[in-house]
Image 1 (cartoon, rainbow, N blue to C red):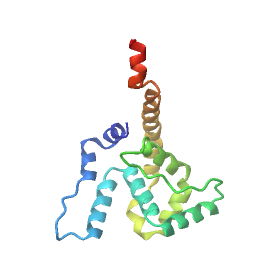
Image 2: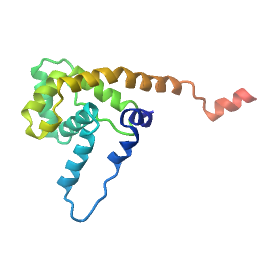
Image 3: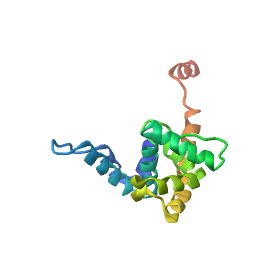
Image 4: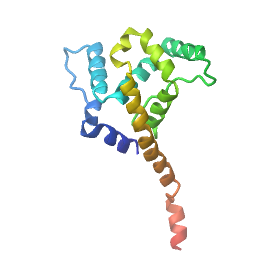
Length: 160
């Protein structure tokens, strides 16, 4: 289902996020910047992806973000969920987390010069608000379908 959501959101260019033509002349920093630029090209979800990745990359950043959220008196302070290909509904979960913690994310981005290009505008937040119900519905439908899948043993007992 995650692949379906990615295809819906990013179209055929989603594969570009997974491939990088490595050459001996390219440093790790250049490769990471190339990947950020590719994600950013996908709009608000791509920018949010870059922000979440930045926060999650080190314990110091995670702690800094949690501290900032605690200053906003959030009861449940969690590190943002990163979207990926294997975690079911991770894009929807990441967007939902972002929407619930918008003030903290905005403040954190203002404090981090490395996130300047990924800082979400009001228009970006509106895009996330608009797309969230759709991707959430797709992901929830996938969960419901899983409940109807029968195992091979269950199928055999029905046939007998």
